[in-house]
Amino acid sequence: MLDENKEVLDYHLLNNNVPLSELYPSLTDDEQVIEKFYEVVRSGTKLEQVGIFMANEVKANQMNSENFVTITRTPLEYAEHINEMLEIWGDFKIEVQEIFSNENKVYVRWKQSGKHRAEYDGYAPTNKEVIEVGSAVYRLENKKIVEYWIQVDRLGILEQLKINQE
Image (cartoon, rainbow, N blue to C red; front, side, top):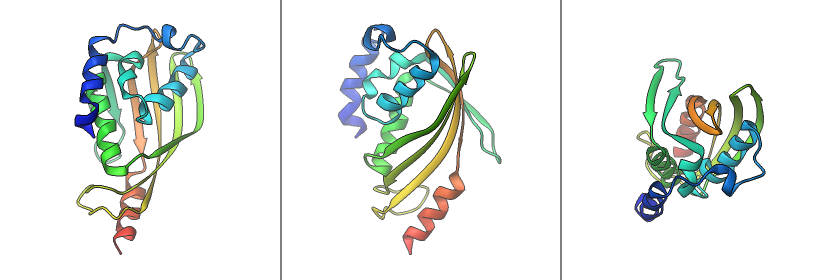
């Protein structure tokens, strides 16, 4: 799926100077920006818009109990990450269950469901449903994501994968 979207993503990276306000003039606060980000980018629906929502470099803090990791992602790298998720989980559904903001930070809790369509963490695909729950806090500057902290119930995903193998 990544190859199919590469041309669209490359085009967007050449044209990512379109301001968010031009495409979505009704987005007036950071919370609305993140809601739209989930709807069009995080869902995998319009990955070509990733640069409209994200700064050129974003600090991604992955809050794992056993191994806290911070990586830097470009919009293209984030889109590639979403494409990998689409390859593994198919056309998954993501539902924002809670969202609120304070100053320039927005908290989101979500539920994502998809079908296990490709090998993941050593588990063969079963085409059975797998549900992910997670949360993130996004820090925005000038209506663009510049940093985020993410937590995902990885153990819950692994338990589902084990059960689905039986």
